[in-house]
Image 1 (cartoon, rainbow, N blue to C red):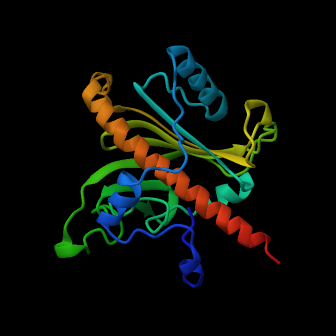
Image 2: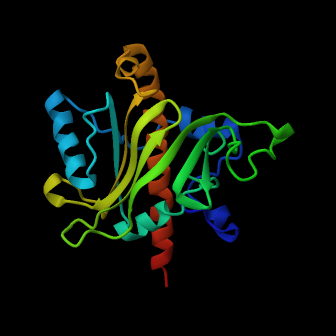
Length: 246
């Protein structure tokens, strides 16, 4: 999720969040322009998606109680979209970094700490915040696979980031997956972006099965993820149009 250079910032199609309050406004309160959540109408629907995830990235999500998938069509080639995803960091304009800060370890996407409100105490400079406050760690993401180039047998130009989540409330997996659209499935944009998370709360299916906890989390997560996807779409399409200009 690329951070634009300063000289083009005034022309951006989305506003940069500058603090916790604007994070709340842009990601939690704002109603997304396009609905992105993939809804399962039955257990059979979920099972079909689980099988597709296994085929695509080799992960069994049936072991987790929660499975949330968001999808959005973007009029940008999948290779360019993935290049932008590879620039995801603590200054990304499409992520609520003032609330859930992305802390790259060794400036790489292989290991990421997500912390509440700022730098984690375990990240470089994590003790240099206001009065050296140690920001709470939400969870850790360790890369299971970063597929930067499509498989030789893949006709959909698929690329993805796949992580194991631990050290916090989600114990499971997270993925951002980009591929070319498949017209036979009614997809018309150049590419499709999928954002997937599947986990158990603190590693326990019993906690993930509590309807109240589940509904509150899903309500928050789905609104934030949908806004992230919509913002990424706007920014990516805007940048691609400028790339095509003579």
